[in-house]
Amino acid sequence: MTETRHPDQAAITEAASLIRDGRLVAFGTETVYGLGGNALDGQAVARIFAAKSRPGFNPLISHVADSKTVFETGKETPLARILADHFWPGPMTLVLDQQPDCPISTLATSGLDSVALRVPANTHARAFLAEAGVPVAAPSANRSGRISPTRAGHVLEELGGNADLAMILDCGAAEGGLESTVIDARGAVPVILRPGSVTDTMIEDATGIIPGNPSGKDSHGIISPGQMESHYAPATPLLLNQNDAGRDTVWIGFGDADAPLCRHAFNLSPRGDLIEAAASLYDLLRQADRIGAVAIAVAPVPHGGIGTAINDRLNRAAKK
Ligand code: TXA
Ligand code: MG
Image (cartoon, rainbow, N blue to C red):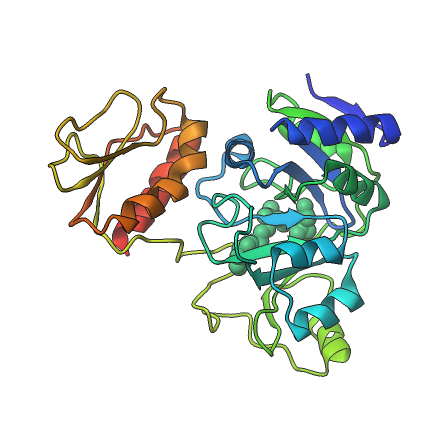
């Protein structure tokens, strides 16, 4: 049974240690309650998708305690600096280029070269993030397709039965109720990828620049909000639902399925665990692609649960 706790020091210390152990903790921010997991741990991120029953893997926002930590992970631009100084801590997320060796798991970034980062204003949330000491990936703490929770009680209704959700930090009622404004701050012009309570006028007042159009693809070919069509697709043709692979093809197995003749064989999860498979998917696709073979053959991955999201992702990657 998931515990709801008042965010006193003991609860925050415990929540932080649960996060570092790969468990999930829901916490309140000024926008909505987030379902948090260690963003550096692909399996923890996979558990977030599984708990929400998300049909696909959208890239997630990683939450940290201050701007300094943000810019250790994402590359600072003059625009990002101005926005950070004006609106953090607060209901704003910045999309930045990743710093070299950015440790955020590829599942949290959907294998993109960018990363979405936010410093929430809720004081309990910030205390929790500071104590966790790792970026916390957190989409809204509801089951997919349902309304975002703004109170600890809503989270309990949505996800209370989930064994991976170890704790709900009751940080009070979220005043916002609307997810943060997502701004692409990689270039000179701010591009609003998802509207929120930090409005275009506020952004213009802060930066002196009229924000770019949120509709359609931005200059980096990325579609938002939440409608990411172009995830990482390998250059090597991807063949799905294969039962074997030739010597010079790359093989990506799942469970017992293997390709005995193949020289380049990987496995998403030798023990047939979908959570583990989700966590390793983007990394293995990248490794497989680097070999430069004629094709990558992927074993069937069971549908249902997070398997649906894995198949959705594989289908997109195969379509190009
Ligand atoms: O208020 C909020 O932002 C809440 C609370 C919990 O902080 N969180 C939230 O997270 O709404 P999430 O993961 O559901 O929202 C992710 C949004 C999506 O619209 C996604 O497309 C966009 O951020 N996003 C994440 N990474 C991105 C990236 N690298 N490039 C473009 N968009 C990105
Ligand atoms: Mg949501």
